[in-house]
Amino acid sequence: MEVDAVFLDRDGTIVEWVNYISDPGDVRLCEGIADALRGLKSSGCRLFLHTNQSGVGRGYFGIEAVEAVNRRMFDLMGFGEDIFDGVCVATDDPTGVVAEDSYRKPSVRFAREMAGKFGLSLSRCAMIGDSVCDVQTALNAGMVPVGLWREGDDPKLKQAFAERGAAIHEQVLDWVKSLGLQS
Image (cartoon, rainbow, N blue to C red; front, side, top):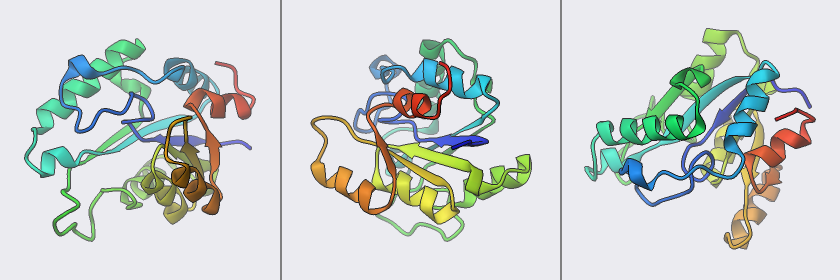
């Protein structure tokens, strides 16, 4: 399978999952993520970050905290922010009314905008993440769905990924290697 672009979730995909992470000191990279992104980028893939950050919409922390966490993530990876061709931080509170034109996953708005901006066919793009919402975003947009499931995760999550036809891997790097890309 060849992909022209990859949309990645942040929490649980690039950085280890921490509930409502807002402190840069809590940022830990997922295993192999820097190598995975390097491999994708060197193969010519465009990379996009698409993250739901409802802690902002719920009033738990401000967008500045999200940006600080992102800066720490970039520092730990050893990349500048330009590793991503586009970044979308969706701050909606899902317990309220989410606008129809929201960027909150599983919305396809960000994917469609990036496809238009960069001349991408979404059928040649992938979305990778650790939640059903990420896989559903891929399906809604016509992208290749990739779900991350690790030992200790809820088996129902793995089943939900399988039912939706998602490739299932433990880490982003595992999926990159399955594509035959060097890291």
